[in-house]
Length: 244
Image (cartoon, rainbow, N blue to C red; front, side, top):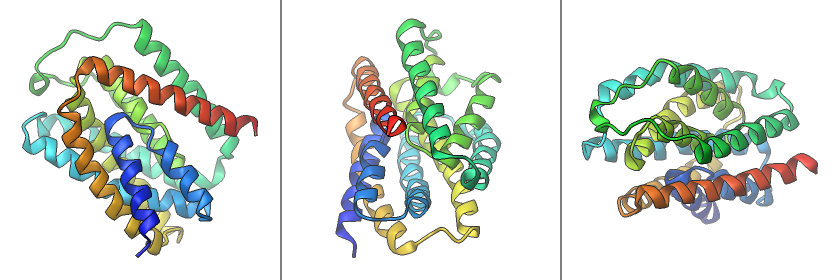
């Protein structure tokens, strides 16, 4: 059993569930571990599929969100993940780094300057039509690259007025769907190494369950600053990779 991969999976999933940005830990750690980049991304999609669904299901059973509303995101997140997985080999990493820098910086500035929409009971909230193209776009980014995907999603749901736990639930479900699409594309391309993917998934499942129980004790105000801090770290990491 690859115990280092289980540990990496747990830490990545714990941070990724709470605030996004799990790639801050996972991607560099697995590169240092000597794994090929496309196998890393494929294994991450597999592990994220399992861990994200487990945390979403926990919140669904806790009655935090309405299933019928969440299911409306499926076509957009799935199409985005499949599209991203299919074109991943065609897009230079430098281009994705630049796109990530722009998107994360924009999301950070927006979160500071723009007021959220008026809060409503989350189970009564309907996602506006304008959110679906964003869900597709984030799914494409997740399929191609990934780091920062959950952070971007949580910013979007925050701006729509959802609570911290509901934002996590929507983000984890969106991550689950886009990762299913992306993983399918990687699987057919022969890029999945299950000796890497399975221990990573075991760790991710553990990390997700620890995180979702921790999230219940975090206030919305604290959550905003945690996510902003993770965003700044992501921007710094990606900028460093970009200039290198």
